[in-house]
Length: 210
Image (cartoon, rainbow, N blue to C red; front, side):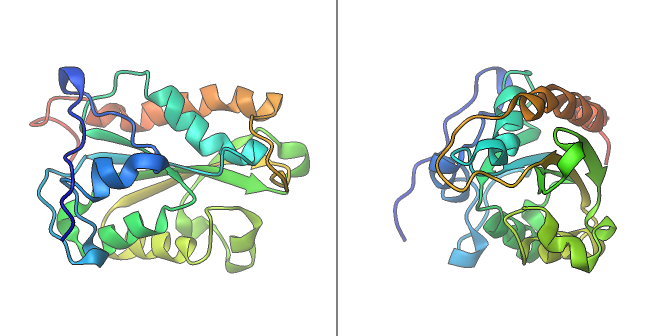
């Protein structure tokens, strides 16, 4: 097995943001061992895991990572884990399915819903069950079979799964970093909704929501 480094320790008990570029060093390949690679977990799972999905090089598709970046400055405790998943959320979800000891209580996925026309910049909350089969390919979540994995997590594991999807036009076809004004404005609202969702988990561990 490859020798792997531990993730950096956060100051004041706060967990650092886990960006896609070094997530494997900071999370999967350190105290959280990726189950699909026959490794073992040796850590206390977070109460809440928040995933920002999207490609920051494709314009508004970078909405999820932008939300994670802003939340990183909110002083959330280590029990709330922030993950810039880029387009690679599936292996995290597989870990949750295969290894109960890794599972959070609440899983929040922030992503985009392309092709929304007049609803660009509007963020809607839903669950995997709210997405009818014909609509699976109408939003990213980067993508099938990710939706099926989320549904299975919600239905079979007891994890509460919340999706926050921002309406966007189709993602840029070429490299075009940066959010449009309406989608950039939606970041604040999405962060406020997430803070409300995680509020019950900001208490002391012995009194936090189960």
